[in-house]
Length: 217
Image 1 (cartoon, helix red, strand yellow):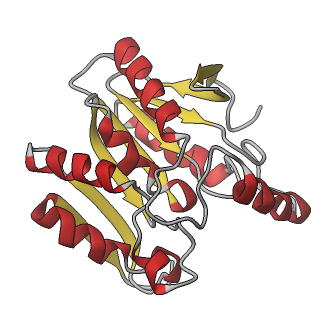
Image 2 (cartoon, helix red, strand yellow):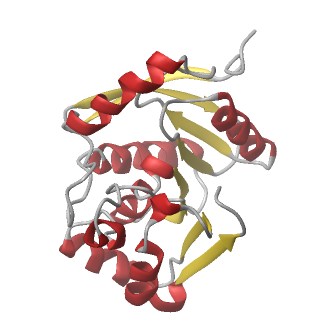
């Protein structure tokens, strides 16, 4: 028995990428995207909580180990994968991550299978901003950004960047104005989020629901 026992293992292919997926539950769909270094026990347990709340949860597995904590060497080996993988944007500014198109395709599939008014998307840390990029797909109706950390805030410009092409940011703003709010959650002293919550507040106004918790995270 593992934490993923009972989850249905599948895969999804689109836009030149293919990743394993794990699905469980019934009800409207929620795509839960794991953080670095992988699909850890904490992420799987969170997915189970969302299932228990009455949703169909789909967890893509992008990198690293699944359902267990990584060994130290595994965690280190994930870093170059994130930096040089063509599907991810780690340090560039003003660019939407290439894997966003794959995620939007997955959202359409999940909505077709699970039904409901739309699909939720939860991104965490490295994948935090992915939920924002998924908003270009109309079936994504509940985006959640948990401590979005990309691009890595090595400079003030990168710290403020939300990981979107300028045109995509306009499209996100239009969706927010049309009634699709964005929820952002971070720890107040978390350095990795940089100042991008301020950027989102400037662009999205009251449509960006900003939650800041005490502590470093």
